[in-house]
Image (cartoon, rainbow, N blue to C red; front, side):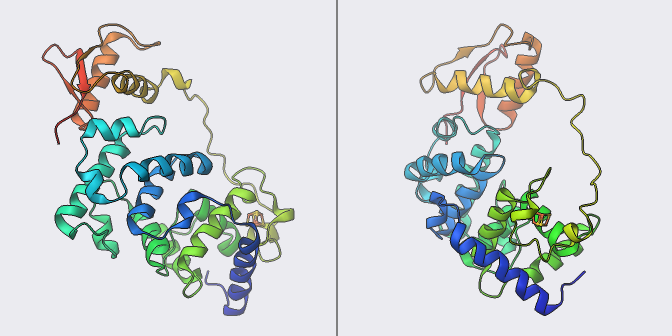
Length: 295
Ligand code: SF4
C-alpha cells in the first residue's frame, strides 16, 4: 500500500501546489502558537471551519494562554462556549489547561505522549498539534483527511487503523507537516466530499486510485431511523445550558417542567448527567441547577 517514491512526490506536489494558490484564509491558520493551535483543533471538531474560526478568535482573545483558561471558572468557560455545542469539550479544555499549567509549566507539551495524557485530547488532536504547531511529520487523521488519503493514496477502505496511520505518516512531505495538514483539509472540503466528490476539478485526479478504479460504491452508512434533532438528548442539554448561561453567576434556575418534547424526568436526568460531567451543580431537589462556579 506504500506509494512509489516518484508517484508520492508527484502527489505531494499536486496537493501543495494547489494549496499554495487556494488556501482558505482561516484566522487560526495565521499562528503556530501551540496553545492557539490546540484550542483551534478542539473548537473545529464538529464545527464548520468558518464558524470555528470566528469562535476561535473570540475564545483566544478571552483565554490567550493556558494560565488564563486555567484561572477561569467553569461557568465563565461554558458561557464563552455558547453556540459551539458539545459543551463537554469546554470543560475538558479547561481541565487540559489546568494540567498544562500544573504539569508542564504552562507550556503545551511537544510530544505525543504528553499531549494524549491531557484531558479531552484524543489521537487526532494530539497529532494535529504536533503537525501544525511543531511541524512534525505526522498525519492527523480526522474524517476528511482520512477520506482523501484512503481514496487517493490507497484506494482501499479496509486498511486496519494502525497500518493506515503508519502509511499516512509516510505520505507527509519532509518538513511540511503543518502545510500538509491544512492542504489535505482543504482538498477534502473543496473536492473530496463523502458523497459526490468533485473529481473533475481535484488536484489529485490524475493520481487517485479511487478514481482510477471507477469510483466503486462505498457501503452506505445510513442515518435511517435517526430522531429529529429536537428529540435528542444533545438538543435538551444545549437548551439547559443556554438557560443557565442567561442566568447570573451563582443564581439557581428551577427546571420543574418539560422542555420541548422532553418530559420532566428526562430533564432531571440530563441535569444529573451534566452535573456529573462537571458543568453544573444540582440542588437537593434535583430540579434546581446553576453553572459550576468554583475553580
Ligand atoms: S480525485 Fe476524487 S476521489 Fe480522488 S481525492 Fe480527488 S475528489 Fe477525492
